[in-house]
View (cartoon, rainbow, N blue to C red):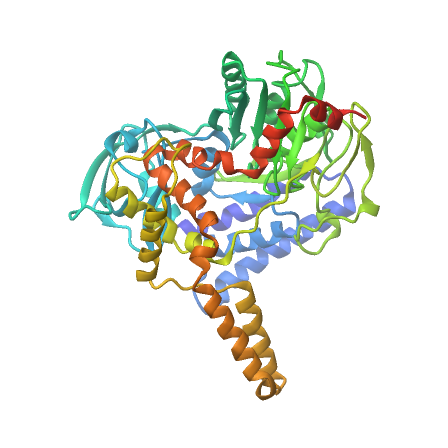
Length: 548
């Protein structure tokens, strides 16, 4: 019965798509109808005659995904099962217990606990390994499957069995699910007693109100400048990007405009509310993972010379998506327009209508158009936003990457927490020489193995030499080089100790102070934040950057 229902829905869904397109050209309409007929009859023949059973849900989903992949990465089909996850992404709300779960060595671990929700109140800790949920083992389950098992209707109960470092027995918790609201502003703080720092992580409903409240709060504490951190922020709702910009931009000013094939998407969005502050010095931190709504906010601040952008070039997503309802409680998320900042530039990196792949390549400077900010400063479109002050990102060493990616840092933080009941406040917390020696000894007992870039290049050279039949001539030199790299690796825990300590301090601090501790532990070692503080401390330099 399920299959026949799905078969009936195929032409229904496709005809709805045709109706939404609203074609007026008869030839084009004929081509669409013709191809839909081919698609439907093809599926019926495959279903009837293919040698093995065909799962209609999987078969059609793959066809839909393949079809949409020819457009852009942001146009996608949302199945009925995925609707709830999509709503969580746009609203920041769901029914659950307030934890983030990730996997390590096929085990499910709690990697973050949200304050004041049921898991936190019951005593669940970062680092706890989840063994069972409602009596069912979670071994080898994907993190999203474990997360879905924890979610549910508020007021319902879920039983969790966990293993905790340092505890000889398994621990059982009975948690009541509740409505979880994830804050868009994930951190507010004062740096050097006079500058406000706001970390904006998302653009779901309420983001602008949270930013407004944060700025108001910081101003009441007498801050002399604001650092708005949108590094790694992937974006979200266009309306929230407009309203976040409005916090710093006068009422009535244009924030962003959109242009699409359908006339209803040719719109201009202006600031509708009274701003919180249009004068306080502002630095916006950006990087290559700042995208979409983040780029709207950053672009508006740059175009109106309202603040200085510090960091690295942004991602370059100048496309706007909307959702359209389909049959059987499914939806289509479709790119409907491009957006333009107040100066008139679109910062979209890739023209998907003219490329055969989805690689995010920067267009050459010769193809970029010039635009002017309010004060007449020169800015460009295409390829993301270029910061006013670039701070080169630090490349993590191979050993630090291995310690992080393979879970050594995470697991040792659990060990440290089980052996230390308290630590200093996270901004003052530092790993002592003796504690780092203990960490090194622990790593040696874990049989730590990793490969460096030099090692990989030498192995590639060795393999190439074997293929070219010249290995015998150079094998002695290659072996000596590889052996030298191996010897140098023995000292990497000491050579990169400063870098490793910072990563370790962040992870350990989160065990005691959760997300706030994670940020506080290295806030004064963050190069981007340091440059922002330097700039806000130099009024003359700040003003000079924003001048024509």
